[in-house]
Image 1 (cartoon, helix red, strand yellow):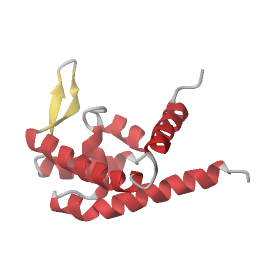
Image 2 (image 1 turned 30 degrees about the horizontal axis):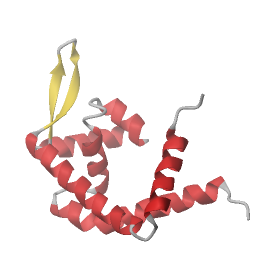
Image 3 (image 1 turned 180 degrees about the horizontal axis):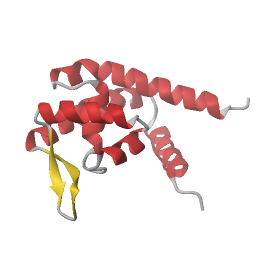
Length: 138
């Protein structure tokens, strides 16, 4: 039986969608829409809106809206970049970090419920496979 890459990609997307759907209520209780959560979770690694858009494969205009919403909610703030006063860097507020951490914990708990269906050995193998797939080509 051959396994098509598109089939695996589709299965992975379905799994991610099911997990996110299962967490939607908890995210809403934290005051987050799903895509706002992704933006909030990315701020520490990618502190500029253009970087967030590239990392999450979202249109820049959409990221601008999510950033505006997160700023209004007090979860992130804009700071002027000292090296270039025309540029703004995004920073998590204390509340933003707490909300992000609680949202990530909800996501992890739901994903763990799915992982519990497979053996610890298979989980280790899945981790190894995903890391291999994410490794930069030689």
